[in-house]
Length: 217
Image (tube, rainbow, N blue to C red; front, side):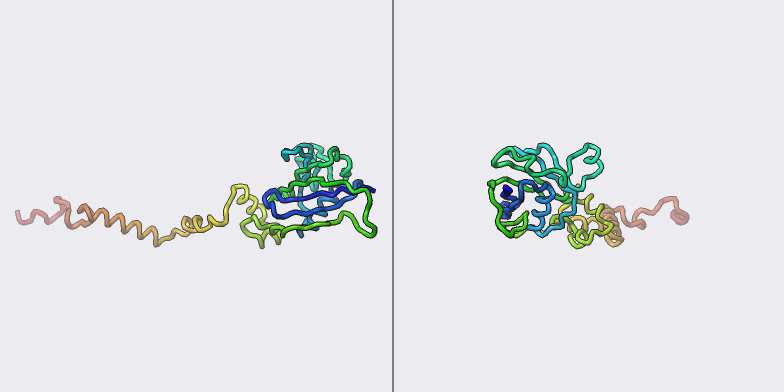
């Protein structure tokens, strides 16, 4: 049985790569799970491979745990598609997106075809590992909550869609922490400005028509 050796690299982390040998009759799901065996990630998130050209442009999609939109479009499932079905080039490329909610993007390139299996080896097999993969939820505001998959997940998705940067938290604090003291301080400043022009003290400008004003006359 022929083997495909794929090199898998993070699109945004060039110094992290994995070489994985997969049997030609194994599926895209097998490769998907092998990738995350090598990264230490939980593979049970909606993800897709895309047939790619040399410029890493996305073509036909093959998906895992599809949402309703992909189901309606009848996107092929990884578990049903053998790798050999889409190997047309000795350096075939696949663009791979893992976890659409908080995605990591990968480049997957066929490096060579090996004609003989190594006896006693279970495939897929990671044969080369370079660099440490970034934390699975390292790109969200609250990694602990995300790792626990708590009910607030949608909130984090919303922040992610807005390209929220945790470093901006101080700016939000400055705005939302404004309290009564700030209001009072502003009021005092405004009164001070009035006093500067002589309009702050009522006794300076008493109404001439008040009773007792003209008693001496």
